[in-house]
Image 1: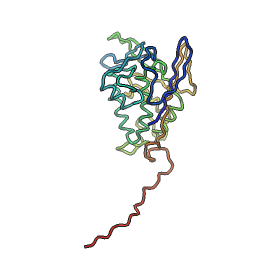
Image 2 (image 1 turned 30 degrees about the horizontal axis):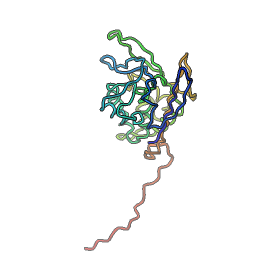
Image 3 (image 1 turned 60 degrees about the horizontal axis):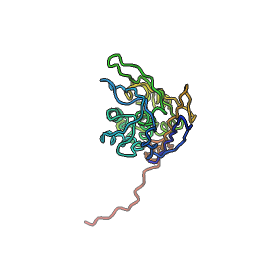
Image 4 (image 1 turned 45 degrees about the vertical axis):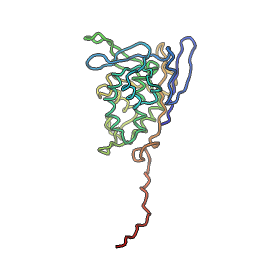
Length: 266
């Protein structure tokens, strides 16, 4: 899959540096100043996301690296990628989103487009450039935990992701998978309803509520903080999926077998 992720890196003294990276490349992870996190690790028995204000760290667990590479290979340029998630988060991620992968299994492109926004939110070394977290202190553990997140996403990404998934059918019931992940019927589901549903912790895909902030702007200024909306370049459904799982008007008829049967002599 050929996709491109646009990442903007901000420097306090040098202004703004703009760089575009392919899906197989990330910003220089050897740069000790590259990236910043707002959460990392799991806190308490409920495995809530821990608030963390610090630099990314190498993901050194081979199993966790393998899982992240399975979901979002563009985030694994080497054996120990620099991330804002640890191994425990990756294992939890795998348990939660394995269900979604099954729902969209008939169209890998749809799932790739969908899962990229969660890979980047949870693990990107530039996490704090994409989103901000609301934090509280757990009364029992006294740890700082993330209760909700404002996630800035480009409208082009949202539309491309949604369009690639809107007509994909489940492998077991032939109904549109998105109807099970929207809180609405497939015909009534919109990109906004879809994001609202998957971003609600009540639906158990995430441990905190996500407010997706869609925008057409390349930068979003909130107070004294500048965010860069996540703008992973999506792949069209028709690239690797059957036409009946994509928004095509007419599927071509199956090929007609024109071969002449051979005569058998008895």
